[in-house]
Length: 153
Image 1 (cartoon, rainbow, N blue to C red):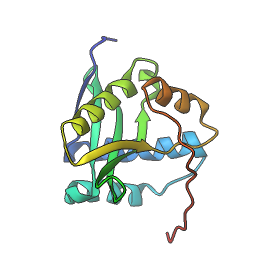
Image 2 (cartoon, rainbow, N blue to C red):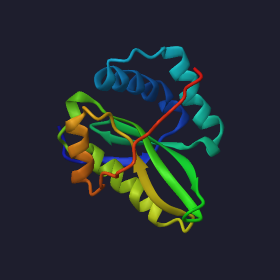
Image 3 (cartoon, one colour):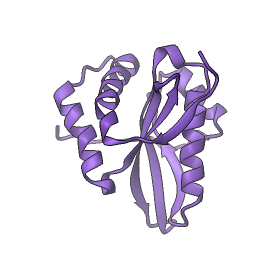
Image 4 (cartoon, one colour):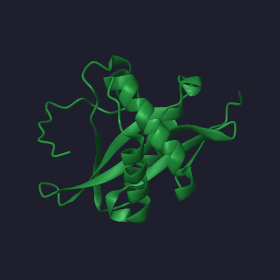
């Protein structure tokens, strides 16, 4: 495999690969089976409405090696947007090649150029120690916050 990893904004034609990555990520990290049709609709919805967020892909050897999605949260405390990194997935054959680091650097640099963005966040399954270490190695700090939720679907 070549060493070159390029990163770009995802395009609509990437949607099927992104949907498959989401299904794989949910199974690998949480043993959760996601409905492929629902995921496919959810991914396409991001391309249909930029206010929902955007996807970023890392390319290596002519294929998508990894991907993530960014969504937006308004922070009244900071009067700025927090970009949430979600749906992080690196294809198994490309792990430990710096794919996430390159994705994160792209997002971080993009956010830093925007005066309305005040920070980056992501959440990770507590038991996913490998991912937690990868995020720490990329320069992110664990917070004292816990996430609570009520889901309707």
